[in-house]
Every structure is written in C-alpha cells, then in structure tokens.
Length: 212
Image 1 (cartoon, rainbow, N blue to C red):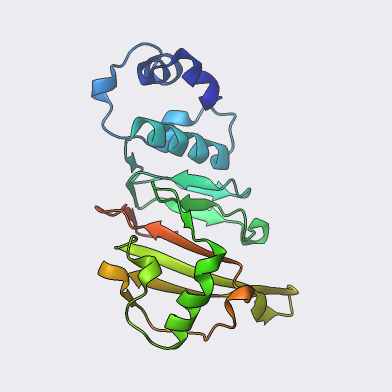
Image 2 (tube, rainbow, N blue to C red):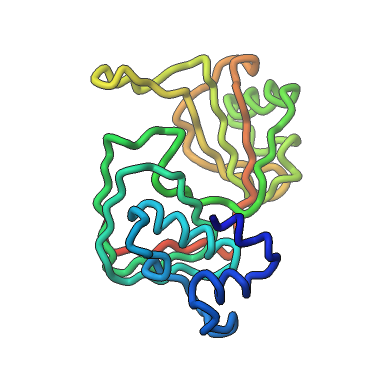
C-alpha cells in the first residue's frame, strides 16, 4: 500500500490523505510512531513494517516510547532512521525467525561493494600474515569488511541440523590499514565466497530501547 501512495509523488499526500485525513501539515510531523498505522486490522508485524517504511521515506525518526507488540511473522523490517523505543515491549516468536529473514534489519544507507575475486588471494595472504596495510582496501576507509568462506562450515547445531559459513569482520582504516581480532585463519582465496565492504555511516544510526 505504501508504494501505491507514492504514485501521487509527494510525501504530503501520504501524510495528509492516508494518516491524518487532510488535517495535518508535513511540517507538523517531527517523528513517527506505531499507533499512527494501527487501523485495527493490521497485525503488529504489519503495523511496525508500515511505520518504518514511511519513516524511511520521510526521513523521520521512530519515537515509540510505550506499548506492547507481538511479533510472529518476520518481515525483514527495514530500519534506516533513528529509533527510540523507550519502554516499548516486544514479544518475539523466535521459532519463526530465519537467518535470511529477520524481524528487524538495521540497514546501511550506502550500498555494499563486492570486491573482484582476483583481489581475494592477496587480501587473504595479508590477513593471515598479519600485514597491517592492504593495497586493495585503500579506497574503503572507515568501512567494515566481512570475509566469508562458504566452503568451511562452523558452529554446527545438531538440534536444528544447521551450521554457518566461516566468517570474520575487520575495520578498515586509512590507507588500507585493518584492525580487529582475528578469529580464524582462512584457506586459499578460491574458497572465499564473498568479500563485502560497507561504508560506515557517520553520524551513526541510533537504536535506543530499554527492553525487548
């Protein structure tokens, strides 16, 4: 429904027509809360999804300081603006959660960069050799690097018959310098599935909550 609202082409239309029935002006809206989207029909999951979709488009923070919500269907709710949950309580059905579809997804506003496979070998050799600077990373200062080896599986949980790819995280500083404690030694670069670089947001996105 939110996408349909955009056919009008203005945020004012969304605010006035769909939320406040022509009784509000865009300038009066300083933040978004979940009750604004509760029509008595939508589930709590759908209400929260709708609120965050709107907040992201309008570039407004979510300020929802109280309330009790039952989350039973992971909808990969995108969080791209500051969130202040205060004493809001979430009851989360963990049995419905999957790794590829979480309840909430705190997103970076910049697209990730997939490094070419031909750069993997040199990066892995430098990481395994404790070299402090990597030439392939000089263009990504203040970024988070995630190295994943899908061919090496770790952390198997027999109860759920599930395991995870070997993965490690590094902060990239100036001139390709990296920092972070090494958890794993990676195999040859051909076993690396993907290397992703994320440009860290400054100022950082805030998510403030007392309890979930």
